[in-house]
Image (tube, rainbow, N blue to C red; front, side, top):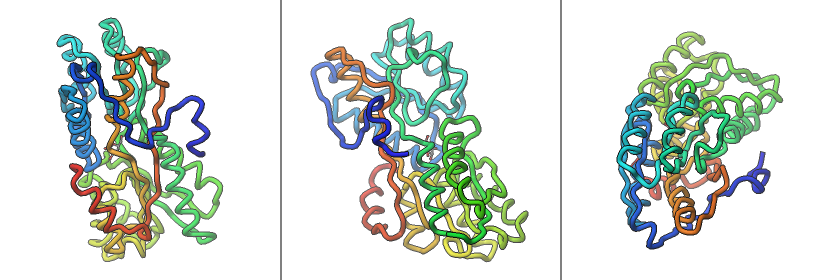
Length: 322
Ligand code: AHR
């Protein structure tokens, strides 16, 4: 799947084009953020604040601590406050129609950030700024297939939060990619909830169940934080992550580049933490000139491996709030 395929229906946010206007300066946006489960999430929150500041937008952030009910409360509170727009990073994909309907009735546009919702009524949100998360999983799976060639390879998978669009999609993309390779099999798959601690705990159980890890050829984690937790578990089991067990994950957080430098991780697919910048620009154009954005503003997904100058990438990312 290529980025080009989506060009007719989706705008691809590759370059940070910053829209500023008199309208932007007066806007107040409420952002219902999931929580701080991962380094990527922390960076998204931090980058959202700085992107708002650059445009003189007032950004009110509500931390939902991983709970959909808190996100629903936050949206209702933003509606009651009469904000100009609501940004929503939905923890899970379903169960949003009623509250998004309330925002729509109040004529407050909603922009989805980094995850999708499942709804039959797309008019409930203005646009979604997300990556193609099926593609991310496919990139990880194709990378692994290339690495192992014809060799048999048992994979253990750490899934993201159950019910989150990105967890479902990253699983699907990976499964589809390896389905073409009969030698590669996912032998265990469980949620690690996108956290480092849970990633480590679940990886420990995988290692125990798979002959101390000797039956495992690769670990695929839906985010880098879980991979970093798993790397620790692999080391504690007396194996070498990155060598005895290949490690491929998603996000491109600074710590995975440290793991590249230590030879303990092998590949990551980047998810930009700057979802808010393109969202603000779309919102400003909408408020300013009535320009209706495409339903999907797609962010870029890029594969990194240890040959990509990990020190340089680490240095460029470490100040972003990860
Ligand atoms: O929705 C994006 C995912 O959420 C990131 O990949 C993960 O790190 C985060 O928690």
